[in-house]
Image (cartoon, rainbow, N blue to C red; front, top):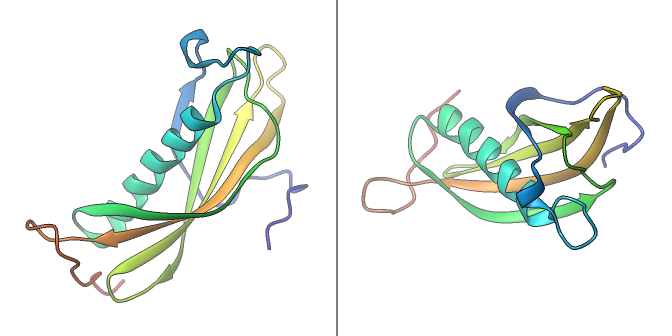
Length: 130
């Protein structure tokens, strides 16, 4: 279980980008789907590196939105390889916001993504040993 009160990100910084006005909902908060997309990209980067080739996202488990992301915040996405199966990898992903102007850092979202390594024909392939 994840402790949402931790003050340090877990894993490797994989993606870092600024939240822009085009990514907001009617309340002025960044869309959760935008944050999810950034997390999926970061997880994909980590999975490709570990699987040494093409991967696809097959599941997102227990995504928890903790705090909103605002325009101007820098979203920092951290990845940590978890369980590795024969063809799949579970990756723990945390998104943190470095708040605009204050530079306060807060965890905003956490989830576990599952990726499957695939070959050129799109069929599952074994993940190479670590």
